[in-house]
Length: 104
Image 1 (tube, rainbow, N blue to C red):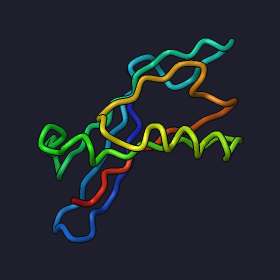
Image 2: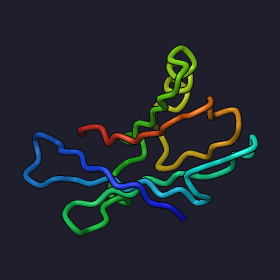
Image 3: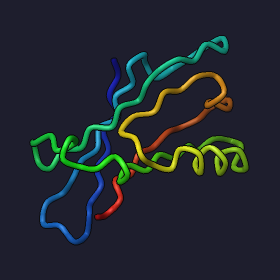
């Protein structure tokens, strides 16, 4: 399992929130074999608050060398889930995936 850590700040709140993305099957895929689930865990300070946030506030985006397809992917995966499952159709050459927690 691999973890990517980023930090976001929600401006109308007093404390910073941090989102950790965890890939169940690694971060690098070769030979056209792609299969993983990316989970988003949200922390307020050191406390995991993921379960207290409605899944509709999780916004997933992809960035690759194909902005047109990224826009389609992003619209299809806008929100409503705290994790995404990826396979070969989700990855265009080199793709990065992000999760933003929308302000309530």
